[in-house]
Image: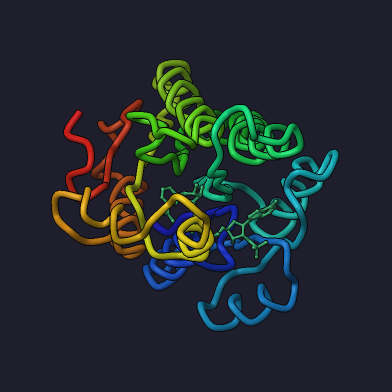
Length: 243
Ligand SMILES: NC(=O)c1ccc[n+]([C@@H]2O[C@H](COP(=O)([O-])OP(=O)(O)OC[C@H]3O[C@@H](n4cnc5c(N)ncnc54)[C@H](OP(=O)(O)O)[C@@H]3O)[C@@H](O)[C@H]2O)c1
């Protein structure tokens, strides 16, 4: 059965891989990001149903964002909260503006979007919510406590909503990738003290997670076959965490 899917942060990186895979599988996909030119190009290349451009942290943007998605899709079967930013800093040097921005983008916006899509999913007695967390949220990461805080919050959100929505045919899960080579990790590795080779050495499989591996897991989680998987915090990290 083809689904109507909203994916935040799908102009590039992991979100784009997910959007491409789901669009190729015949689903109706709406992609999002901040750059309209980039979204126009990506939307055409992956045959998305449409795109929404804007900064998710702008005041009241989630409501406008949801309305725009509904105008394109009419209803939302699947929400994938993927947009997110990283912050590499010890706690005493983390600027207040970073704290506000990451808490909002990585945690508050996913919460608000869940709140907006849940009534429609309940009415249809079917839904899938997938939050893209991070292995940093599952096990912690020194000098990334802000980022880890937001991603750990997504685990609490996913588990709680899974329990709350189980009787409505809605599943909620969080996927926690280890390092993936994207714009986010390239920026992170360009910072002093976060050495790419050292990070690679710490990964038991000695490789980065491929964006397509995450897309493939998401493709399975939105299928009817995965109805029984809910409230799970799934680590896809090449062995970084075995917990
Ligand atoms: N890469 C990794 O190693 C890694 C590991 C674990 C978890 N993750 C998580 O995976 C998710 C995707 O990461 P990625 O590596 O694919 O990052 P990325 O390459 O930097 O892509 C991030 C996406 O989010 C969008 N975005 C960022 N800030 C936004 C804002 N304020 N408003 C609207 N859209 C915004 C970007 O769009 P524009 O830039 O076009 O606006 C882009 O589409 C994130 O939640 C990240 O925390 C990544």
